[in-house]
Image (cartoon, rainbow, N blue to C red; front, side):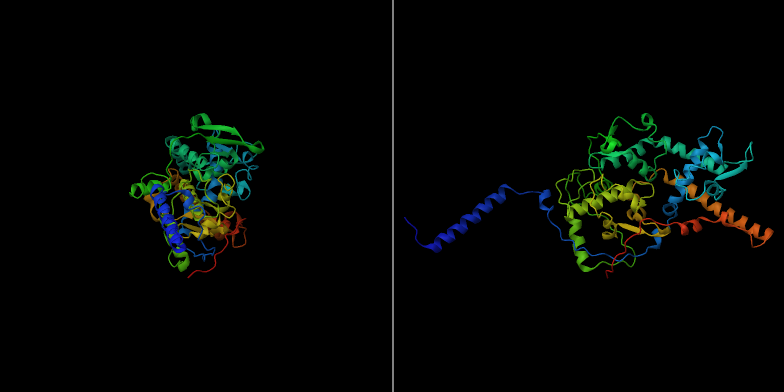
Length: 423
């Protein structure tokens, strides 16, 4: 029988076409495939107004960390000497190397509760030793390093595993040592501090690097917390929502709220997993970037870092050119502090829910050093008052300036860009 009715033929084609799609939809039902998300990008590139949050701006151990670093370096120079004291000539030429912001002798005299000055046996040169309080903290610090060597090694391993080739140049690692809480000599004693999963390699441009061979699955801080809450089963490409901690008075535009709700439903790509299949401009690539920044800050002692320091990792971790804007686009997760004219990125979750992020073992030691720094300010103020009473108001008291005076004089090489308003 020959069918001549064109309308009937059209209807038949539609039925067959629908049946074919139904068959294939039954046989092939993708579940959380990367290709479902990689080309999807809904985000409207608008900026949110920067909102000052006094809670984060007043965390001393974050904002005094930059000054504490050279103090600890000088403390190590003294503590490592067999006699426990050194002449000023030993460190006077190391100001740049130790990141001392002024002449070394003047810097040491600014912290009399940490460094004790006395006249040496020859040529009346100034010598320095640690005060009893500082010496006690130093001994405790060394005990913590000894007891927590495995944990510190794990933090370094995680940093390297987040890189594209599971390898980082030694100079990059050395720049991150302070944030990771590693002692100055950590890499100088590989037999003692590293295990068999680490290996030194030669990289491009003649750089030496440190690589990690690791076949075990590594869970990020986000995954570990989600698993404890029962919302993550341990698979890959599962949707995990980031925890949000809005600052008081910070409101998002309606269209950004809508995007954020959809963004939270996207699969979570671990910073330790391969991400080569992701389109760079997609929302899921943005979620991977945010997850990496979250994990990075969770490894650090203060769960914060100067933003310009994090930018040094861009090339080695496959981060986009404008990765710094992720901090601005997600103000409920990160806070950018402009205190001391330095742009510091802070992970909010670590301070709003300390149980969610593992506390760094060396943080308690740094807080004790900061207490001594504050005691030094009190001692210098008493000296200044005493000198005014004895010698009158015209003497030069610049050597007795406090930490706040120095912080005001420091200049930041990289300022935070401000956001446009969202209400």
